[in-house]
Image 1 (cartoon, rainbow, N blue to C red):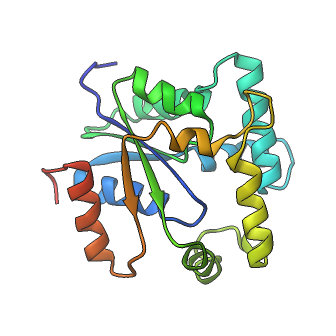
Image 2 (tube, rainbow, N blue to C red; image 1 turned 180 degrees about the horizontal axis):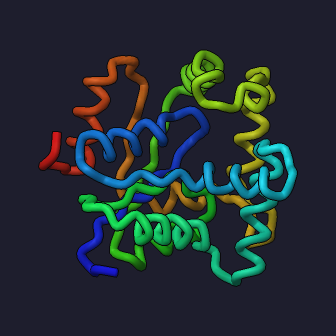
Length: 200
């Protein structure tokens, strides 16, 4: 792999717009966007499991323990990049939820970005876009359940293989606040924060 490969790892709160940033990087700046959440969902279905948050957390922890690599999901995204053989400006990976993933992005010379927004705005976005997100059953939750899910992922359980998004946040290089509903304005914010130029 070329040492010049540009990698951006995306992390943040649930419903903040991490995938939206990934799609902006793909559509406007020529990046390949890989969702590790989609990788985990595919694995859950392969195992005959419902692709809910709890099962995805379990699978990601299993992979970290089995491989001994906390950044295993980053490696899986890199493998997709290498297999694509495409002419991309870089690789955008979402969503980082273990600090080892952020560390691995940094080892590869990449940038880690935290995306956030007001909790009620994030919850409303998820409810509004539940069908288009392709997981309406998973997203059909009360605001209290939404907060509980997020809390379960924010703090480490004492097992380094589990999720700890607060530790990921502490490793981030850039921060994007996504409280706008204006997509064009948000595209401008993303480009400005990340200092991106080129394909538009």
